[in-house]
Amino acid sequence: MFRVLKDYFYILSHPFESHSSLGAARVLGFQEVVSSSWIFFCLRSLFLIFEVYIGVSLIESTSFLSEWGYTPSIKPQAVALVWVLLGILLYPLNCLLRVKFWSFLISFFEKLFEKQAKKNEPALISRHALCADFFCFIPIFGRLISEVFRMIHFYAGLTRRLSFSSTQAVVAIMSPFLLIGVFVVFIAFQIYLSLALII
Image (tube, rainbow, N blue to C red; front, side, top):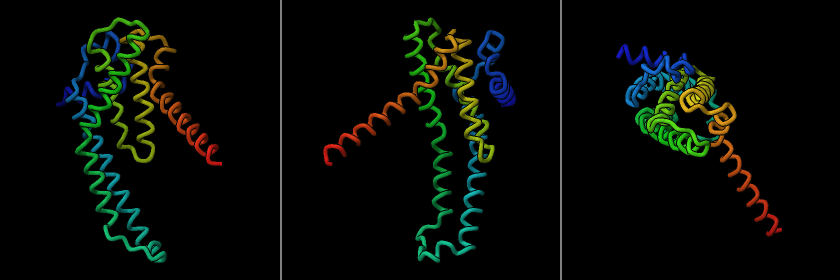
């Protein structure tokens, strides 16, 4: 386990080196990356439970909800606890879905840009990007830092392992956000047309 954590932190702190020939020996499998990241996700979950408990205690102590005549039948702490525990239990499935999604996306752009790579390279890049979940346990800005590091890992993997140019790597990384943007514009346009026909 010590070797796995050592490699995990090496991949986390050296994204470009871990995807080059220097870091080729430090390759972690899916189970190793997920089990290491799960530790930090559990720490984040403990912080969330503590934050919810403090927040609900403050709201109840000021009797803010009772002034409006609201008395919840289920304690908010119980709902938050169930939600956080469900997140902990489903974390490996979440990681698997993310690895499959990004592997598919990287494979698509690999074929689109006519790059030749080994069969498991897209999955390896996606697995190594999961190391960025280490930052989840940092309060408030942890998710943001995690996502920034994840994009850096994807960029490093695409440029070093698959020889993408900088522009190709950015296009591949930003494609899910562009698709979501196009989808939102399409839905907004459909709503606009529907309202225009009604009026």
